[in-house]
Length: 80
Image 1 (cartoon, rainbow, N blue to C red):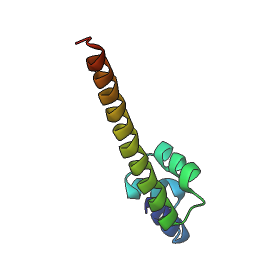
Image 2 (cartoon, rainbow, N blue to C red):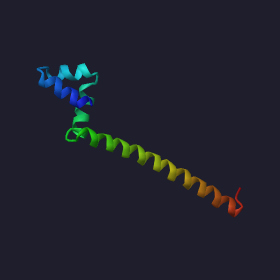
Image 3 (tube, rainbow, N blue to C red):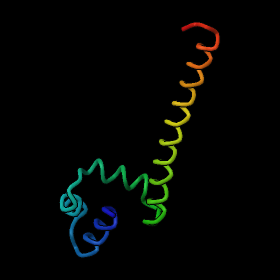
Image 4 (tube, rainbow, N blue to C red):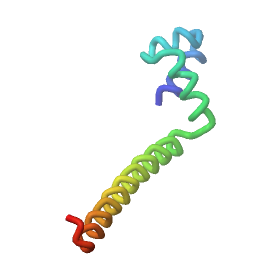
């Protein structure tokens, strides 16, 4: 994980700015990640990412089913 890499680099004597440059992200991105994921373990971050993907998949499924229901409802009324 990139946040961990910055921690390692800074513990080896690099400045935070140099460490951020070395991992290839902007300072804004680094500090946003630090705010969002700073207190979490790597496995917790992975779990959050997995849950976000599953949530997005389920939202698409519900959306598709809602559209199908609306189409069937209109068709059953003869409004086609």
